[in-house]
Length: 142
Image (tube, rainbow, N blue to C red; front, top):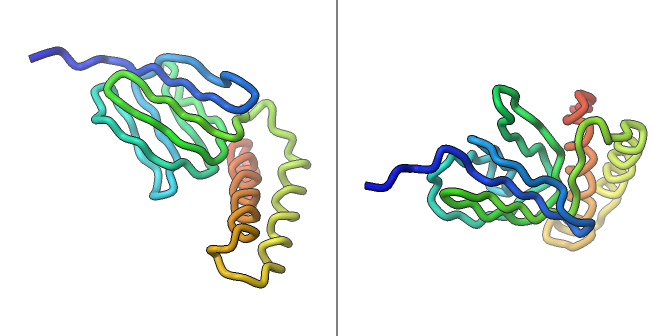
């Protein structure tokens, strides 16, 4: 029986380029079906990602970053996340994130359609992205 790997390569790509390329022993991903974890030796998985907090271990420290919507492919030795946004806590502009949150809340309140409408889904995605950034810096408004 082959030995299981003891780490996974974690790569995060955005339209602006490679945002993260590291090795870790655990990753937690915010998927549209709920958060899930990936450890070395994970079975192959493809999932849709929603805006939220991506967590991974760097030595003994758990690192948290905000990610936007996208897709993740996980396997025994690799996790590849393709996302529209990526932001570290030190890069978050709290005033901008709060403003984005308020704007998205206003859009959500004024939509005259269903949750299946594109306008609603775009406003919800903007709300979730702003909320993820605020949560990352400890300014969770909920």
